[in-house]
Amino acid sequence: MSIDYNEHFKGCVDTIKSEGRYRIFATMERIAGRFPYANYYDANGHSKEVAIWCSNDYLGMGQHPKVLAAAKNAIDACGAGAGGTRNISGTTHYHVQLEQSVADLHQKEAGLVFSSGYVANEGALGTLGKLLPDCVMFSDEMNHASMIHGIKESKREKHIFRHNDVEHLEELLKSVDIKRPKIIAFESVYSMDGDIAPIKEILDLAEKYNALTYLDEVHGVGLYGARGGGVAEERGLMDRVDIIEGTFGKAYGSMGGFITGRASIIDAIRCYSSVFIFTTSLPPAVLAAAHAAVEHLKTSDVERFKQRKNVALFKDMLERSSLPFLRGESHIVPLIVGEPTCCKDVSDILMNEYNIYVQPINYPTVPKGTERLRLTASAAHSEEDVKYMANTLHDLWENNHALRAVA
Ligand SMILES: *Cc1c(COP(=O)(O)O)cnc(C)c1O
Image (cartoon, rainbow, N blue to C red; front, side, top):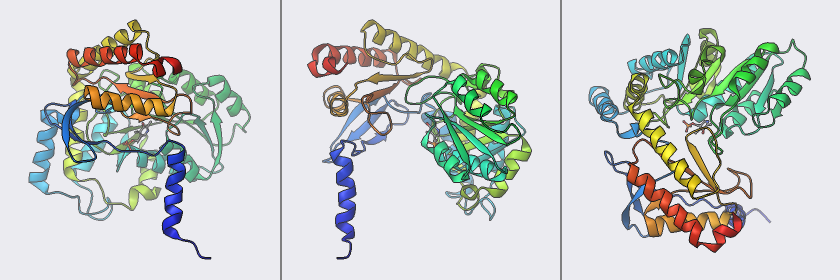
């Protein structure tokens, strides 16, 4: 009998459903000027206003007047799309300007803009690995899917080191011929646990074993460092990292990804990376918005200060309520529920009864048994918003037997 395509694909989805990891997207309409508030649309199309507590628009730059004005001006000046790939009529003045802006941000010779942070990781790591003969890739076990994809794409030998474990990394480095080219790929802030890599120790090892370093600062750019250059800037280590990768989609409130580094490396990726070359380039409005945000945050501390104050207050209140959150160094607050159905239930209760939106994070994004709410206090939340959230969680955990049981 020949395959029934329809039944086959339904079966694939049924598998996901039976494992409790069928994803239901919450439909939101963010309210510019009033973020973190948004209109939430339920399955029947009814809407109500909710406060978002799981956004990556950490600094509220997605609604900053300068950012909105830059995007509108770009549309009025140049129209909607870029009109081509970077090579064939799709390189605008906005691309060039933004690439200079990120190179300056990280104090590197050159920058390159991609469609997204995901594509930047995939393209850069894949290309670097392929271009270096007999290269060996070293990757933190908690690295983002996009880095894993890029490393796979390189088709090189790879070694996975235990999360943030420099001793394990050294053991693996030692096991490989010192003369072979090597790349160490890691992140600064790990998004699901909110912890931060031992960047200095990893850079020391890279020097000792003559490896290139590739640092994903996606959750660091805009937020850390005097000019928003990330955790490596804050720790005075930026000049020792070979390639720094970031996104315009999180703290910069827009979209797109980028890498920065030595001109020789960036130019090679520009020439060889297929995901960079064979796709329509980002439109002027998106780039102008990103540029306005990056430049603003090089000199303004107001947003970083407000966000840090909110995060500190939030962590302090959760601590006093003895809630089971992971105490990482970063701004990300993962509140562990530990069971997928319960995690979804808490999220539903928050939405239905308290007008708070937090997406449950389940396997395979995080390991089974560590299902969680990943909470982000932004610069756009008010002190009242933070207190309301912390008090709500306190009451929920206090009064809900199921939650107490798993915690
Ligand atoms: C979100 C994320 C990316 C991808 O960035 P996008 O711009 O959203 O595609 C890459 N790395 C990490 C660690 C991320 O969390």
